[in-house]
Image 1 (tube, rainbow, N blue to C red):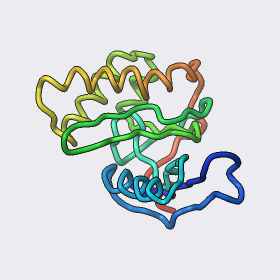
Image 2: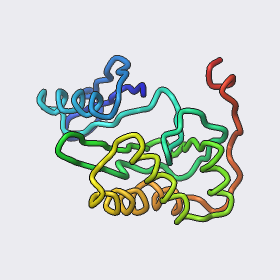
Image 3: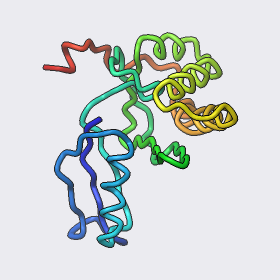
Length: 165
């Protein structure tokens, strides 16, 4: 994943605002960069995505984008060896083919189940944590999207070629 971190101190963003150089890595790399800004006295940070993956299951190939009311930090999973924060401040949500078809049916339970299974595939956790992860996904990112989604069509349907050009 590629992001630019926007950081600022208490109060207005200008002139205390800084933008990082593009940072590429997983959630741990991005969380470490944000901790570095916190160590420098920055109290507010936002990571802006420079690439798009499915915002529900993290599939790297998206086929549609939805636009809803912008959110905030909408999901966080902390274990002994990782701290994963899902951030969506722009309100643009990418969806892979599978998630798009589930969204069209408005089957939020299946969407949470699918996203939780993909999360488990990418970042295995002990069995006792799996229901916690699923509830975190259902109550965080999916609930945020569901509040802003009212059956609207995607703002665009895009292909991998469109993303790479």
